[in-house]
Structure formats: C-alpha cells, structure tokens
Image 1 (cartoon, helix red, strand yellow):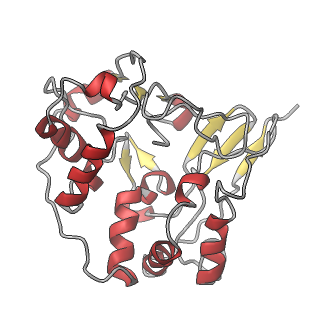
Image 2: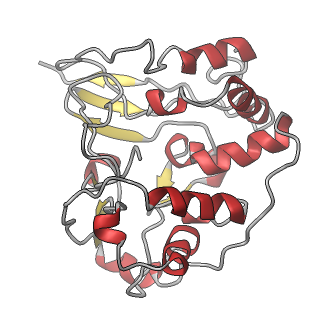
Length: 264
C-alpha cells in the first residue's frame, strides 16, 4: 500500500492520505532515477472488478497484466512469485475487501529501449512454502523478500537491482526538501547495521507505531519514503527474524549520506 496509495509528504514518512488506500496514482520516474515514468495502479475493486483471481495472480507473481502487457519490475513480482501460494491468495482476497477508490491511472511510459526488454522480463511464478518455524534466518529471508527490502536498499541499473551491492543502500530519491538516499542495511560494522543489536533494530521500527506516533510536519527539511508506520505494524518476532537474516547477508562498505537538503 505504500506504493499503491497517495502519501502525504508534508509529514515525516509520508503517511497514507485517508481515502486513497489502494487507489494508485503515485508517480515513479526521474525522481527515483528510473528509465521512464511509471504510475502505481489502482488495486481497489473499482479497477479490479473485472479481473479474475487468476489474472490478478498472474500480474502479482509473474508480471503480466490482464491485457497481456509486461509490468515494469518496480512492481516486485519476482519477489511475490516466490511466496507461499496461500499467502498470495490471501492478499488477493484482501484486495477484494478494499473500499473502491474511483481513480483513473495514466499509462506508464518506459523509455523506448526498455519496451522490448520488458517483454522478456515476466516469468512463471515459483511458489515456495513459508518456513514452518516463524523465527530465524530462513523465516527472515522469506519476510525480507516479501517486504521488498532490497528493492529500495539496493541501487538500480536500467531498472534492475545491482546484485553485487545488495542491501548496501545509496538509491537516490528526489524529494521536495532535498535528496534522500536509502540506508545501508548490510551487516558492515561501520556503514551498515553490523553494530546494531536486535533490540535496537526492533525498537527503531516500533517507534513509529501509529498507536503512539503522530508524524510531524517536515516543511522543507528531512523526509523519507520509508513506510515506517506500516512496518511498525509487524510483530517483534517478525522484525527480529528480519534482523537475523540481514545479519547473514554480505557486508558492503558503503557510507551513505542519508539526506542532502536543497541549498538555499
């Protein structure tokens, strides 16, 4: 929903604007360093009422739209195609319950060289069972894949993720107050989360629990696209498993300046 809803970037973390959940319309283009301009689709029943579950499943897990067009991999279908099939079906069932949002979305516009390449990107889903044990590294790997952590915390080249720098951050996102760079979340001791304890990692997320946290206005200062308030809703057990998995990925030395304000 952090992609498929409108977010109020006048406030820290861009909380979702009331009444826009799943309605789409967010633009992802040069501000994200992407080759083209892409719009998040409306995934409420207003737009999906004529979609079958099979068509939805194909789009979400294989990257092929109802009309047969390939989806740009900013939509993490490569991740979702690795989830437990029962999880995928549960997500589809949930989408059917959303409040319909009447919002017509513009067509995305990839740059010309990508149009042909995109036809080769969709792939058959390879569903995998969720780990039986709901703790530990393997469960954390599953959650990190489904949460799309690498999608923001890894630099991109022509839309694809740079595998040699997985989770090392540095992806630049232009915002109203300046340039945001995603954090290095590899276990590098000096520039990543190598020195973080599990408790500190969990507490960082739980600080933004909507039950106790109200996002302040940021004016022209620091802001972030990190959907803290959404991830804060995860259980401490799940967040702990994510931490345990991230501690096993390859450490990458990458000192990221998280935010640079606009010079006056």
